[in-house]
Picture: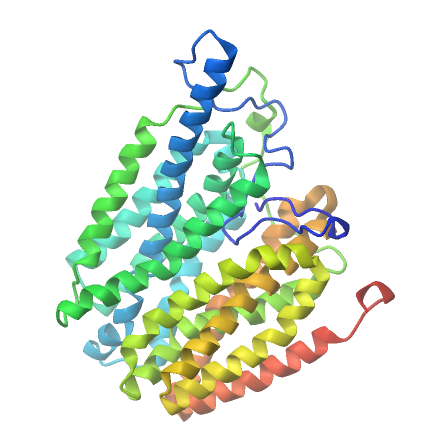
Length: 436
């Protein structure tokens, strides 16, 4: 489900983002698969290559737009979570539980339909993901209330599960893209900007005045419909008779080989922190009167993570993973101090450091290590790694949210901070001479 990570010895460990959930093999093409070509290629080889290069650029831009719009739609309602919950008379716990519904839609698709785009083709699966995202946004436009958010989040999760890895694989197969690594980097930029940009777009729209149906919703819906049009105009894939992908099973269950627990636990804790930034921290900021800064903090988490990914790739898998173990607690401490004191500079600094660890060092290091350990079953091992990530992303914020309703936000966040330190201390202990 994710793009391959190279061996640690070459210093470049895998794809550039979590969106590389199902990238193509190392040479950029599945066995027996020819690059996507236009039917209008001219007879002259040089002219044909130039035409395919220009076409690949247009198609790459279209797929990048799809990834951006789908990920932006996922977090479009985040700045209004607190307002929707307050209107329904609910607290932080139910809000966090609603937020976790996203994973309820994503995980069955991510784990159970890993071979869908291989069997059915890239375009149909991408289109299905965009359509589900549009339906989620339309649902909230029609009924902008808390009860609508949970089914919308499930649809968003399903849409993200269908588009993330499929988009990266499609990019890797385009002629002129340079294979898996460049495709994963391109997809990383689109999804990182989209993930933070959706919330930032809604926060900007709310500057015009308080509303539960901001202008960002219909604009994003229109953009999603436009992406469906772009996909319709893209060329269909050509497959030779007997293409091996026709025999790929759609259902692919995760695998956990020996040595995969440390990266799995590391990413679970890291993404748990990002889930708290999405749900629990905004509630505290609203109490301190600086709730408007929750969207910029979320944007910083995603963008700083993307900016650190090239650095993390050069470090090597295990070194990047260990770096994340030390960076994340420091970032969490800054984030907690900023939320407790209502100090925006501390909050933003903490968000930047947390993002560099969660989506930079810890994610890429863990992903590369999981890919190496998987061997011939690397797709299933990566699926297991991502399963740990999304379980931490959803379950921990829900638990901390309900605890916050019982004892207060800051005590609950402080308690999770203690658990974070214990988990990272255990992970920092070398398990073999190679880990030292």
